[in-house]
Image 1 (cartoon, rainbow, N blue to C red):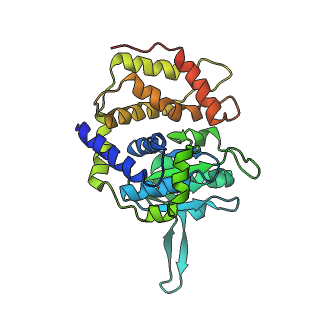
Image 2 (image 1 turned 90 degrees about the vertical axis):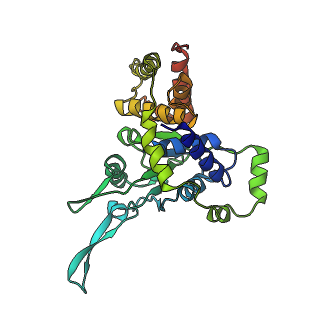
Image 3 (image 1 turned 180 degrees about the vertical axis):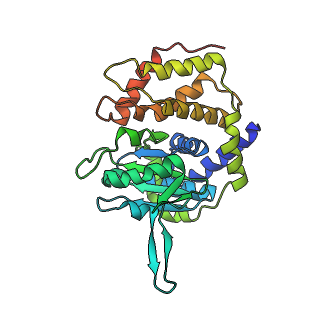
Length: 311
């Protein structure tokens, strides 16, 4: 594999998205990591921190089609997948595709929709296909869902069940900008105008390469043992539900992609440590969903007790 192509791809994406989202390079790189690994992202943050603009900028950067879905209690599964409607002129039923038939989807405030509608996302997220009236359609690649939810407001919401949380590759938070960064955003032109001015920064061929070639990154046996020690440590407490095998696979893939974008064809412990909080924290449960900060602190305490392999 050509690691230079990965670093160049990373730099192009971070630079282009950075024109819109200032001071959040780590969050942008995690979204890019999930995208390379064909994963989906859950952004848990208060309103007005740039969640929507981040995904709009990311979609323009990679040249993908983008659609935003505002989740509300009256949203139906067919509003996402599409419906068959009767065309009186032709006398036949025709399929009208829903917003899920695109490349990049923003599921805004996903926890405001009913569980039935939330569940309609599962097939698309996991199987990369949609079934309507018994007819199954395979979605085009790349396909990525980025959902948002407000962790501070629970009135009128339907919390995501653990099974659906586990299908998100990562959970991240943008947080507030630093003072000087926010000053520059306040005085500049409209953020939406900045997004509209963005041009595609990477080609479909470059995207296809990084999404396929990252799997060639290797992991030494001692690093793999360290990786498994982290996974198993989450399962040793009776009061906490540990990480699933799906979560372990996600962390392995994220470590591979992180290594590749760092210019290496092998994983080091730092790659695992960097991605673990984003990949594993939302998969740890005490019966009620932990806040992002509390889950990351718990995971960090587990990792501190695990011996790191040395060169």
